[in-house]
Image (cartoon, rainbow, N blue to C red):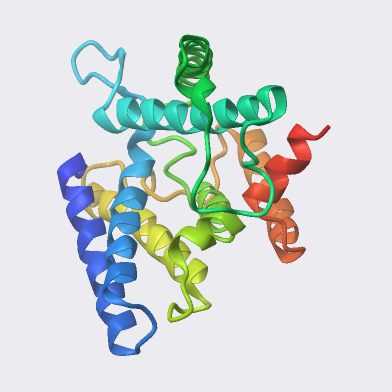
Length: 252
């Protein structure tokens, strides 16, 4: 089984290859190509966010990707909900409306009350996400699968097509297909991880566990994943982005 550093290296090489091709075809600029490389490395690290087993004690062991992922995901969600709290309760920002690269936050955002609210939200999501991940993941489980890779890629595309994200990255001289390029870089990185695991598994009795398409041990889980993949496909086809989806959810 490849180590975390090796997966990141594979993701880096895949991202560089894609960036070079994009630059040669005048599809992206150097900065955008560099962002694509980073996204490929992120994609290459995602499959190892599941919990592994200690080879001696056989107990579940937190990996470095698991700790990093749960921490940053908690932080990201906390920031979104914190800004929404300020918008809905204190009427200080307008995060879910038409994007503005500069978010104006009044003094309340850095007040004692504001910091307390942010800390409370962060701890809440941090604890919930870690408990959730510990109960649904196992090493080389569903996260090491093709449908989960596609599902993550669809979510990534919904992020990259959000107006707020586009405002941050796309300028008049940038490619109109930049969201597709970023999504391809992320998927390529994810794919290099699964392929590398399968290559390292040859002759070791674990071939076929690094990039599964179905498992008889958890048919319900795979049915759910494929259902979500199909559902998100139609959601994306109808032009729904993550930003617009969040806006609809919080307005309920």
